[in-house]
View 1 (cartoon, helix red, strand yellow):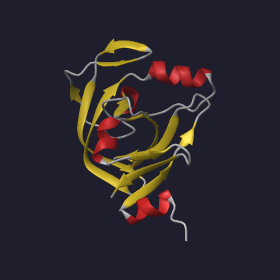
View 2 (tube, helix red, strand yellow):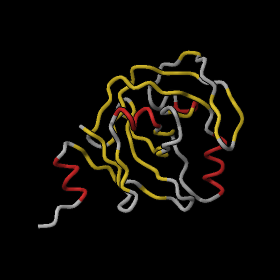
View 3 (cartoon, rainbow, N blue to C red):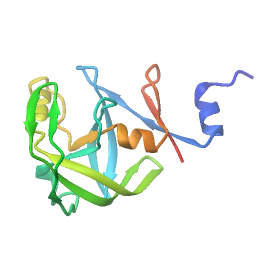
View 4 (cartoon, rainbow, N blue to C red):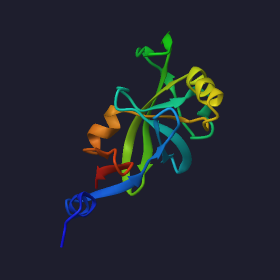
Length: 147
């Protein structure tokens, strides 16, 4: 019997989450913050997991000023807030003390809208991927996180 990558990773305690590839070659993923579902971009190049400042009420986030400055390839540095001790769930994987950087994602969502891609609530960044010992299977469009 041929063992697949999926079978092997499951046997090593990983859970599998489907990724949706967009026409811009980004991957979107469903996740919940504080028991509220949202849509996120999976971004291995983003240092932190982030949420749009406009989603404070939706995700029941308590924020405070942050010294972190946010920037991306498409936008200048901007002020941020931070929200600590949030519950982040991606599939069966759970982080009960997730910190989120909050900033205006309008420039990202505008670019997505122009390409007729669904707007996102935030970004799943390298901090979460590292904590979950993430493995990305690009061939099968799956994210694996260690339970």
